[in-house]
Structures are given as structure tokens and as C-alpha cells.
Image (cartoon, rainbow, N blue to C red; front, top):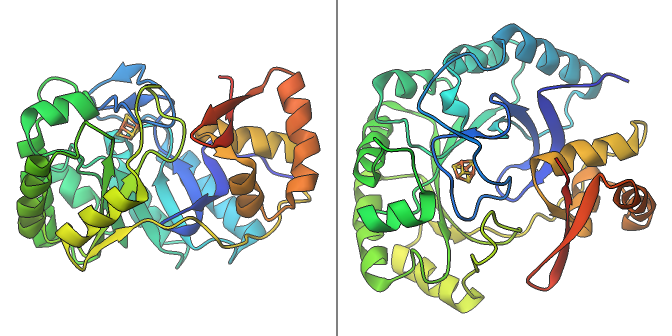
Length: 311
Ligand code: SF4
């Protein structure tokens, strides 16, 4: 069985179904250090674009994966352990993937570098781009995204508007709400105005559903989310829980696969079971081993138990 260094999953994605993750930057290199980040604190906050992982290596792994499990994924998603647009050759990665498969390519980005023309051009060959926009006003942006100096909400929004002008694929913009941080009525009105200018195809509304980087970060209630959805209009959707079963990875080394998935983000037993297509009962034993070996730990968030890798 082949092992992949830069691929993970397929993992259950609430927006992309069965999504094979492609990690373009090592953990955890990002332009932000969001308070809700589910993969932990940013250790290298940077604006430096470079070839963090060789393009040839990524394409080699994608090719190998597809030759083994063709048809098992809905999307190939560039995302992972940080901000993928920091990879200076992301454009070549996307074009390279398009050259070997018809599986659509998604880019999950915080959108912070879209103000740069080169970054916008790099993403033009993707099928769908899923940028974030959690704040419009400067102080809220600082509070929720904790960006590297030099970035601003205004720059991000201008970048998104410019990108919409040239990109013919889908833009599904995500806003993640944290209670008491970016949900004030005045901020919501500013978001609505910005969204009218950006014109995304869809607006995905999210809240803190997995253990966040900052423990004090809390989610909005269903009712609060519904009220925001109504305010933002017909393109806005509250992201629903993943409910699709995936192909099994039974033949793989289950323990290692669980560990690899949890290294990317904490998941509940239900998430893992759905994502891997393996009954919870079968996973429980392996999870128990991983906990006793000190490789993963339990974390209570809301009413649910999540498992996260100890990195
Ligand atoms: S949530 Fe995304 S943008 Fe924010 S710190 Fe984590 S990886 Fe970076």
C-alpha cells in the first residue's frame, strides 16, 4: 500500500463531499492566525511565497492516488496545513492536476493574497475557489484573523472583487462566525455590502463546530445563524453536516490512516466513520489504541467528543 506525504483523506468535507486534501505547505504556515483555526496556532506567519513542496512530488502523489482509487473522490482540494496560495507554484499544481484527471480542483484559501495579481492568475484554472471573509472592519479583522502586518480586510475584499471579474469558475465564499467577535449587527451590514460587491456564487455560513485554536471561541446558535442567513439573502446557506458515506479504506493500515486524517483536523468519531466509510465500532478499537499510545487525545467541545492528533 502506498503512503502519501502530501495527500490526506479522502476526508468528509461539509462543502465538497468526499474531498482528497492536497497539502501545499507544511504545518502550520499561514498569513493568519485565526482564533477559530482547527489545526492549531500558526507557527510561521508569513507573506513569503515559495515552493514549499516540490510540484513534481505533489503531481506524482496525485497520479499514484488516482491510479489506485479512481472515482473515489468528488474533489481534489488544495488546502491542508496552512494557506495554500503561499505556494508560489500553485498555478502549475492546478494545471498539472487538470492534465491528469477530470476530477474537479477546489482551492480552499483565506483569500488574503488575492490582492496580488499573480495569485489571482494562479487560481484561474481551478474549478471552484472557496475563499474566506470573516470581517470587514479593521478591528474585527485583527481580532478574528490575527493577520501578519501588511494585510487588511479592505485589501482582501478588493482582491476578491478583482478575482470575481476574471475567474469564470465558482466562488463559494465562507464566513465563519464566532460569538461576540464578528456577529454584531453593524458588522453584518458591512458584510452584506461587501458581498454585494464581491458577487460570490454561494455564501457559506459557518460557526465554530470543531475545537478551535483559542478555547474561549464559541459558536453561534442555530437561531442566530438562521437570522444571518435571512439577512444575507438567497445565496447564503448554513453549511450542513456531512452525511455521505465514502468508499472504505479497509485495506489500508487503519491506525495510520486515522492518525494522518486527525493530524489535519480534529474530528468526532461520527465524522471519521462517515469520512472513512467504516462503522464506528470498528474505529473505536483503533482509536483506543492511538489514545493509549499517546498519539491522539480526546477533546470535549460543545456536547461532542473530538479526537485530535498530538503533534
Ligand atoms: S483557519 Fe485557515 S486562514 Fe485561519 S489560521 Fe487556520 S489555516 Fe490560516
